[in-house]
Amino acid sequence: MGCPLRIFGYGSLVWRPAFPYERRRRAGLPGWSRRFWQGSTDHRGVPGAPGRVVTLVPEPGALCWGVAYEIGEADAPAVLDALDVRERGGYERHDVALELADDPAAPPETGRGLVYLAGETNRNYLGPAPLDRIAAQVRAAGGPSGPNLEYVLRLARALRELDASDEHVFALEELLRRP
Image 1 (cartoon, rainbow, N blue to C red):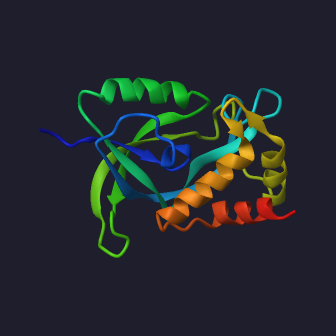
Image 2: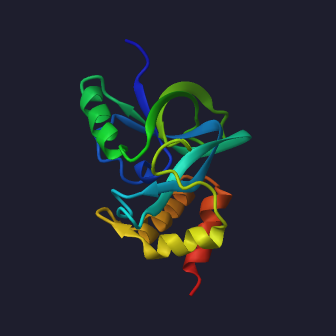
């Protein structure tokens, strides 16, 4: 038997995978940072009024924490098909090296996994913006999957439950919680 198929979740997959899995593990992706630089016109926004969701950007020395889901061999084709539809708004599948760390105090083990990320050449990429502008866009946006604000707050809560720090997410959350 080979290595299990692992899906690395760093956004909504952290709290809502919506697919069968055999094991859920805390995991980190070295060399990448999570940023609210991707537009969502199919989940947390609509065409003409996109929400902002996370993607990954390369950053030497960074470590993006999330979750690795181990998928059973029989479920793998259907899970990948469903994720290809769910992540159709500009995300592409990439094979990456992960640090698997169920216990934050223990040294991680390494493994491979698949991650969906949206690069700057996709049609929904919004790119960097001042955090207050991102917050204003998030407050105003909503789509078929719910308000964009809910996405940010659920992600922040899920990261805290993982004992995972993310300055960008937490700073945006703080701005959004202000009256």
